[in-house]
View 1: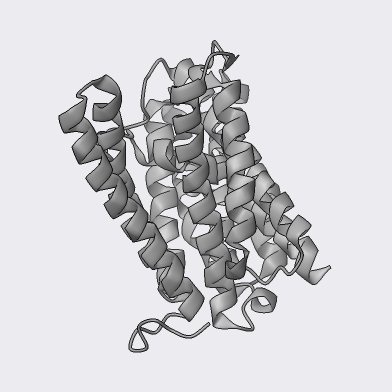
View 2 (view 1 turned 120 degrees about the horizontal axis):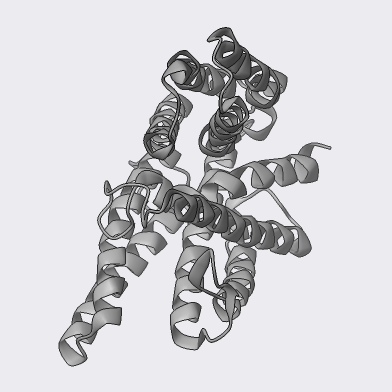
Amino acid sequence: MNKIFPSIDVAGHLQVVVIVIFSILVASSVLFAFWKKAKPGELIDEMIIRLRSWWVICIIFLFATLSGPMATCIGLGVLSFLALREIYTHLKLRKTDRVALLICYLCIPVQYYFAYMGWYNLFLSFIPVFMFIIVPFFMVMSGYEKHMGRSMGMMTSSLVLSVFGISHMAILVCHPSLNEDPAMGKGLLLFLIFLTQINDVMQFTFGKIFGKHKILPVVSPNKTWEGFLGGLIGTSVVGYYMGFLTPLDQGWNLVLLSFSVALFGFIGDAIVSAIKRDFGIKDMGDSIPGHGGYLDRIDSLTTSASPFFHIVYLMLLV
């Protein structure tokens, strides 16, 4: 596809998506402004706050997506650090866990280095295999056994959720076989991020308008079957028409991939909601107005990025 702005070093089809995203944000801003004047209320106030956050989030993710692989890995590595810190802030860890905690933080640059180099096997095994053994070992070395199982489970699970899952977005733009054309990995990453955000918007919108039947009444009372199904169907349809961002050439592949983003994104949202319930908090932090902390905003990506990568890998390379 020809570039709309030839002077910008971004493939033409990626430029189209950037224009579409910002057009949607601008149109939504104008619509919500008129809506608020015509019919003020709690719902429109909440949607305006969310829209402001989406502006910030879209700018950050677009920069990470359209930059070079190194900038993408560094940006996502910082995001993983911030998300991991939010979780550990709320965990009631033992004083003897400090060394193991430091090891967890230090594994972030290592994981993203493996992603940047495209070392597929090391990338896949470092956290779920090696860190799963190393972190508990340092806890054992502390010589304090009380609540050992709790600390081991929480620290390693948090590492998988906030680092291992998110780092799959980095290897999308660094895996050699997926980036023979430099625009391929960027297109896939933009496709994933765009669909994840669309799914969140659709689930929220369908849930607010049509939601009557709660799907997780204890863990997340605001989630409904109507919102969930609306997100699944809507995201699958949008993904089908956004397929030009991917190297996939079969319609059913695009639908399956889009469906997985919506499904696993919902699961990630539900998991983080359950964690917050356990902690007795509403948000993981207050870094992003209207959306709480960093993990509150990327909760869907923590569980959708890794299935997305492996489904693409199977469809294209196996």
